[in-house]
Structures are given as C-alpha cells and as structure tokens.
Length: 296
Image 1: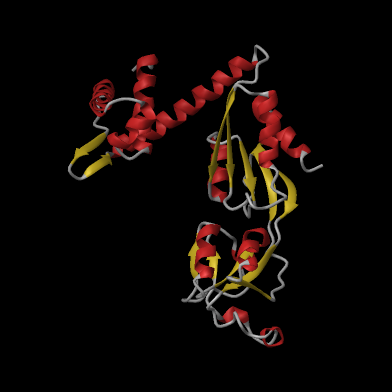
Image 2: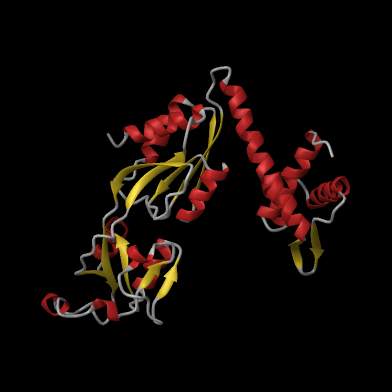
C-alpha cells in the first residue's frame, strides 16, 4: 500500500494506543474520544487487511501481526521525525527532536551536568523539542544504535560497535546496609574481621559479573534493574548493596543507612556520553558539544 498522510496519522494513533495499553488511556494523549480512536484503528485494519488487536472484556491485546505493525510504525515515525529535522537544518534552523536517555538515579550527583547543558541548549535552540527518558544501560545502547535515542548518558559495561563513548567522570560507589540490619550496629573494628560476601546482597542485574562481585551470587541475593529499587531493599535492613555515594548521602544523614568497609576497584563505574559514530545531526552535535564543555 502507499503510505500517505492519512496512513501516517492512523499509524500514530495506533502507536499511542499500544504505548498506553488501550483506547481509554490514549484519549488524553491524542485528544480524541474513544469512539473516534476505535474508528481510526478499524480504518487502519481495513487499509492493511490484518487484525491489529483484540478489544473486549479481557482488555486490550495486540495480535502477532499487530505487534509487527507496531514495530514497523515506530521505526517509520522515528525516521520521519529525524528526516524532518534534517530538512529544517538545510535552512540553518535547529529544529526537530532531541531524544536523551539517561540511567536512573543521576540527578543527585553534583557531577551530573545534563541539566546545565539542557539550559544552555534551549537558549540556542528553543525550537527543538527535548524528550528525556530513564532507561537500563543496555536499552540505551540499543536505542542509540537503532535511532530511538540521540544521546545516552550513564555507566556502561558493554561497548557496542557503531557507537562513540566519551568518558566524562567516575561515579564513586560504596557498600551500605540499612537500619535494622545485623551489621548496622557492629563496631568498626569488628566489621573488618567479617566476610561481608556471606550476607545477602541486592545486586544490579545489568552489571557485569566482574563489576558485581568476585564471588558467585547466593540463593539469598536479589537482583534489581533500578537503583531506586536497590535503595528500598537496602533500607529494609535485609540486604547489603553497592550504591552511588551521592544517592546514599541523604539516608546516611538521616541515620537510615550505614557505610561498610569495602574496597574493590570494579565498584565505581565511569559515566559516559554516548552517541552514534560518524557525523551527527546538527541538533545532536550541538547538544553534545555543550554537554562536553561542562566537563572541561
């Protein structure tokens, strides 16, 4: 089929419905009534000749072909946005979208300079729409490579081909336990004699084995994908965990956490600015230049 403006509009409606997991939830984003959204999806199904989703008492559920259509539509819509930006750049204007993906729990780090770079960027490119999201490190790298994101910031254990990594600083980590843990009140000199690896730890699942710890995980360990989840588990008093020092500082000050003696060269990851290799679009290049300047 030929893809016209009508099809693009229908695909954008379908994308919103999928991302919001249903017609009702998509109403606020689209500014359309539920019957209108339903009519749009039916029209798209007629044009494509496939059933995209099941709608009924069980809720919203994509069909197998609907999943494929959604993946294709996302790729198409992202490509159109990027090409629209490139056409605008021919006129010398910085317009379009800048999609930034960051690992979680960096906002409390005084070395994290993305907010300052955004402030500078909006002054020179006020027409650019900035989109930010918090993602797992691996999802950021995959998204950078397939074009879903333009700039990534965080600590990464994997270095994918086709991406450029610029190290900007190290994020210091330390080992902590929470109030109520049996080690919370142990004297410092006694802690030095203990094997802390024998206790249950809350680990970050996306860290490499080398960065997690030298010993194998035990049945009592738990794995998380977000630092916020890790903090909650440590605060429960049931687990030890390696945290960024800036993220633990508030809980240290309030007496809900205690730092434990632990020395391992692999525990403090480097923070990188990551982009695609090669020539970058003008919008991305301008933001990366401003962000890199924050670390000079």
